[in-house]
Image (cartoon, helix red, strand yellow):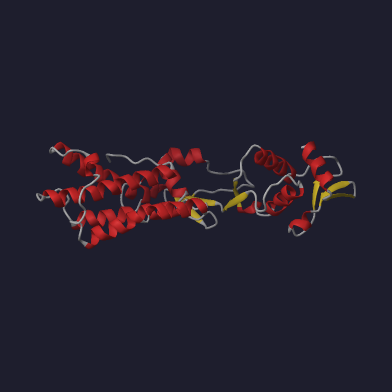
Length: 289
């Protein structure tokens, strides 16, 4: 900490006033200068953040994302100002921030009382014990962090199409069931579907499913660049919906070998993308449900 203070003093972006050491953070876009060291000698809480991020950058971390509550919005400008003032080559806009609103929790139809002031809260461990790791991850990633969100415990344990994580996982399990039935009937296995002729996929549901599969790389790239994992959850729900529509419209294990193989190739690709997308979120892709 003392090294960081000395670095900032040496940069010329500090001054002393009323016995305190101030950072000229207004020179880097902050709305007012900030106290770094109070008159009693204690450091203010943003200075450790500056020291930490200097060390982080010097250890080679060129991209850092801080996840904090929206009530910490005011720390962004002063931390970035301190990093710029340190003059150690840190680029402007470092680090990135994702600010989260408070999450409301509803259980048994009633809101669970949460109050930081009163010290009453719900932990992630509580949510996982009440539901599952998969549900907690999928639900909390399914909304933009700066929007109000209610975690419905009852919905998270429901085994129906209203539960988004169940809906997506069931699509994957449903495909695996079809692939197992094919293999048990003498099918060669998924690897044999690699070079199948797809020209038999002519129905509108099949076309819609293929178009959605083609969007996966672009969607994932944009979600990663924009720190937007909720885009992955939206995509997976759309993909699961497209598959369920396709499954209801066309029988897959038909007698025509060329048509059957084309349809199997399509659903196998869908299962792979569902699996990959869920893996990005840290959510499992069960083969049986």
